[in-house]
Image (cartoon, rainbow, N blue to C red; front, side, top):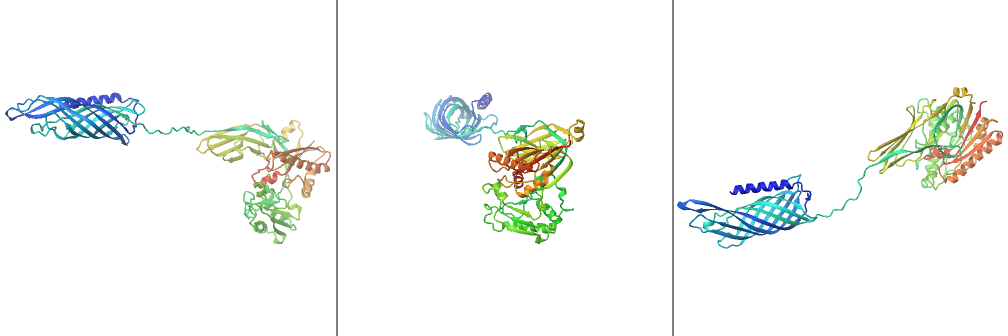
Length: 619
């Protein structure tokens, strides 16, 4: 009978747990909790008694008794708790013993129980169901008819289920089976008396989880978008207009490029940075040749010392003075750097161009005679230099490129204003300008992207109406990539096309041949001679002379606008005095259009200029 009861109890407990698995009111992780328990004990009495003829008779009986007390559950690992139960328990029962030697048993035994247990939530998919097991101990403090032992010891095993019925309140029905190791009584006739118990009850406990700070930080999702705010061009007054197309014309063309008599140095360095000066000399096969220079003012002025060396070799009577200077702010304590810079240039000319040392004089100076502003970094960088001064004017004369046929773009300066918007750092951006799949120009950088100016070189665009494509790509630090693209139509006019349309051909001469001193509109005597020698012969009575004044980026917009206008006006006065019948137009552009890279000393020097266009019809 005992086995049947145990089996039936186990089936009931498992069935109850399966029905409750889907309870959504139970937390998976229950904190330390404590409370009370109430229980009913099903007492399964059994013992052997002596019968007739010396045989033993097994007597069985079932009794019901109450229990209750205090319970605590302490989490010690995930899904594992150390539990303890302390309280009152009892063993009640009435046994009709079929023996002439023993009376009817009607017993009530009162105990104080203590149970150290482990609770294990063994199902990963249901952390409300648990198995419980451990020791079962009790102290007997009262009985009515017999003399029992002083304690009860055994083990118990069972199942339970946690219901969360409040924020911190748990109701846990529990069924266990307790198997004692000790007898109920020490009286000889009752020493075989055993009382296993099926226990069914409810635990009511309280325990609040630790309040965890709610993370209100929004989930970060990287974002990146690209595009173009506008694609513009600058008119003659330096005002911005939206670009619609590029006009390419085939014309007769001449351009003069200024030769800046300076080489710039990095801080405390006696050899120029390759970004400022590309040293060719006689190391390369065939040596350096001025005729091989590209028609680009910045590229030309990165070969200053080789141009001077080549011209001195061709003019053996020329003398040269090299003056080294320094930045009196950051290089103030470096007393030798000025002379070291000048000596380096002298040695380079001697070793690469076999110049007689007696033709070269070197001087070390504190700062340039016409220094740039020492209040800004750009000015300080420009004062770290060497200056060339020759007894022969042809050593420092402009570079002339004269071509019978050349393709010029109108407008010649196009401004791209791309953007890369992201909620993280932009680690890389790139703008490519192409025509017919051929890469014409590329700009690259990281972080914020500013407006990018494309100065279209002569012959850079093809002799066709293939449109110009531009592609802007940006990447963020998480690896996101975004690309935007556009197309600019091209309208092309060749000599043959203009003739078939009976359009008069023109000759355009472009002169960027004089450079002004820092913050000055005055034209030096040497530059006046250059204007008269090179520009005046190109001006005819029917020519239109357009003079554009420019500045570098140092200074305010308004100040530079006025300065550029004065430079253009001074150039017009000199030319008009020699050729008064031509048509003259002047434009003060200022720093609005950066015709050269203002991030380099060479580009800033070249930006202090006037560009003169002499446009002459051939008929």
